[in-house]
Amino acid sequence: MMKKKMKRAAALAAAAVLAVSSMAACGSGDDGKSDNSADNTNDGANTDNADDGNADASGGDSTDGAAADFSGKKLAIGAWGGNDQEAAALDKMIAEFENATGADVELKIYTDYNTQIQADFVAGTAPDAFYIDGSMFPFYSNLGVMEPLDKEEMDAGQYYENLLSAFTAEDGTVYCIPKDVSTLATYYNIDMLEEVGVKPEDIPDALDDYKEFLTDLQAKLDEKHGEGQVAAMTYNLDMSRNLYILEADGDSIIDEDGKSQLSQPGILSNLEFMTDLAQSGCWQTPKDLGLGWNGEAFGAGKAAIMEEGNWVYTTLKNDYDVNFGVKEMPTYKGTQYSMAFTVGWGISAASKEKELAKAWIKYATGIDGMEIWCSGAGCLPSRADVAEKMDVESDPVWKVHSDMTKIATPWQKGTTIDIVNSNYQNFGPSAFKGESTAEEAMKKVDDQANSEIANAQ
Image 1: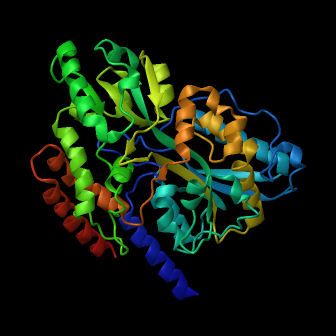
Image 2 (image 1 turned 180 degrees about the vertical axis):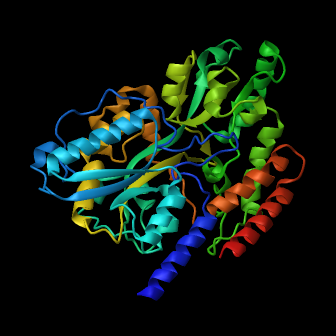
Image 3 (image 1 turned 90 degrees about the vertical axis):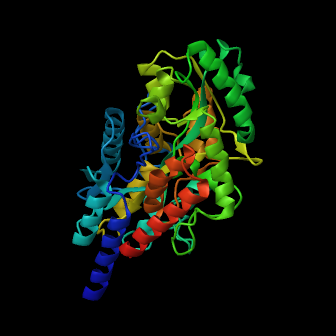
């Protein structure tokens, strides 16, 4: 037993070295803002749909019957801190669950999620149920710290298949149930386009056609506002945004051993498509514009088009005076893509209250609990029946993001993606600025990333 504990502790320590010591839900792009998370970056949009009725802790509709009685039982749950709307939604869920089950729920908020929860796993003090970000799931699924979940018992068939797969191990075992999702969509400034004679419908449906369109738009914007004052479109030099483009030909950026292989020809041809856009001057990062993130650049009128997650919606409505529209993400090489950012609830393998923890997850990811959470936190449901109950399609912005859920690629790529992504962000800019070739830059990424990966093992 001691040898097994020591092996698990060593594995957790290695994971901590590989993981960036930031909250699991966040992935910081080159713009310096953690803006691709379903949980830590949205602004509480769509808060008027929460169901005030009693929740059913069995996970189904409240009409399915009374919840199990867990009076006198205590449940510890772990989460990371969010904004006020998220905190209020989670508090409401806890209150409803306690009322329905008689259980006492203790919420532990982590400030440095990966580092702190791994320390709790080693110490044997992890909460009974806890958040796992989709991008971090590969770290934890092989460590023996999560309880396997029965697909039928957890009603796994109700969740979007691509989201559930993000929490499914290679052997088919499900360890977490997705509680929400955020997706990317294309935002455009209606007034800015129209003042230079461009209609929203002129925006190509295919990314392959963007260069000609954006180059022409950039020239018109330069004439209207002055050269370089407004970008035709912003972009993020970050794997969480670029993955679907880089891997469009079927090549993986990481090999079976977790090593970076960005310098292979199939990846390079797609990277060169992006560097060509950037070097044309019509595709700029928010940092190029002197701003922090896409939402700020777009809201401030410094960019006509952006690709962003639904967390930006309320920011644009509340903080900026901008007339905008939203359309689906473009196709690339004939296939439509988006990225999905999802978080799941898992159960500690060491929990002494596994049945109570299961009841919590079935409630939190069931119809009533998920509606409370998503309505308050401003993210999308991970199951279609909740999306229908929330009537997300009545809002044109939410409808587009919801439609993207079905085809989106979950942000997840093995256990070494943080190292690869960090080096991609470090060496990639030289290629995007034309200071080196794409092959030269990606060879540096591969060499440095693989050295760091080898040192961490």
